[in-house]
Length: 168
Image (cartoon, rainbow, N blue to C red; front, side, top):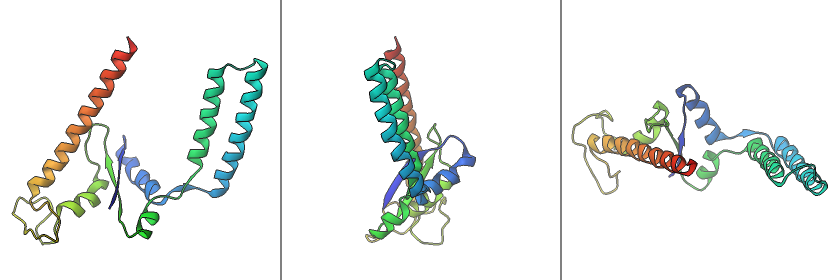
């Protein structure tokens, strides 16, 4: 199973972001155009820096922008590629605070439900068999959801501390 964890700020955008990760975006023609424009932009930057009309920092920013256009021009998505290798591709959509968008339900259903008739959020004991999933209780599912939220909060806090201390 291939899991792509993505952070999405707006719940209305979650379904579209998941679709883009699964099935991709853009066209190969757009990718080719962006690649040609990148080559031209990088050549222009070399000439401008050499002539003294552009600083190294400005050239770096311009080259970076051109590279981002190439990156954003096309993606084939991951779902088909992973499926061709015999795997399953699942996108887990989280909020910036570590909450779970409803679109992450596919993942939680796959890992938390063993196929019995008990609802996925029930507290009843589930059967456990060596050939089935390892999470056989709803409490394990809730622990996973909570642990993910805590990990997101800790990472956000660490990032903010690093930026605040670096800004001094």
